[in-house]
Image 1: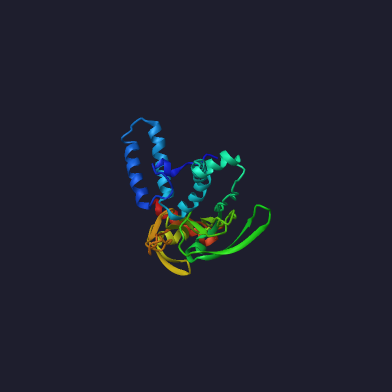
Image 2: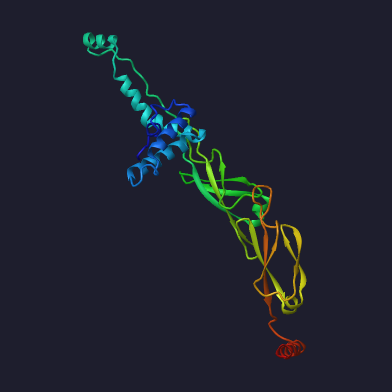
Length: 286
């Protein structure tokens, strides 16, 4: 694995830099290697990407703590070894007169490591996502054991949002904290309602006479009965929009409800119905 030294990329000497120092270093480096200044320079473009990657990690306190554990392991420990190679006068004297036989035993320092995060995903219905729901999830650990737990999907969660469940990822090492479980939420449409952004689409069936003469229909969504007025001469496939009766937008408002008309015909005609259609046919020819 290639470990990137984000501090070195930003021109910082160690991980002791403050957040203000990180921000200042980022601005200076980003300005120097920005693609607008280095047009056509592919190497500058790659450096600019590393600079942004480094800043995103080091400016986030949680991500920085995780990164610093790895930095100490791959970078910090090597710097300490370099510093330890410089011997004191006393150590040189001991080496000359005692052949280096007197040594002080130093136990290696154990560095805690964060456990890795785990990504998974679950499906929820539009209604479950609208009101919120408790979901049970099962995961298989590295040693093959199955673990299950329940968590809350909050009301109004957006499609493709991720929930972070702290401490349910892979185990940490050397006393490090466990990683987290990241659960991606997939809001699934069903045979009645379809979610598009924060708008909800559904269909409503109309008899021929209802489409021709106009009528009033009712549709139930999220436990609420909504009256829909169908105007005269409504064609199949027309979209009737009811404002703010769709899905939640996460800001206290709702999208729209789109009701698409669908004109249906009876499978069989009675004798009386057939005569009426024949009369209608004659009228339309006049």
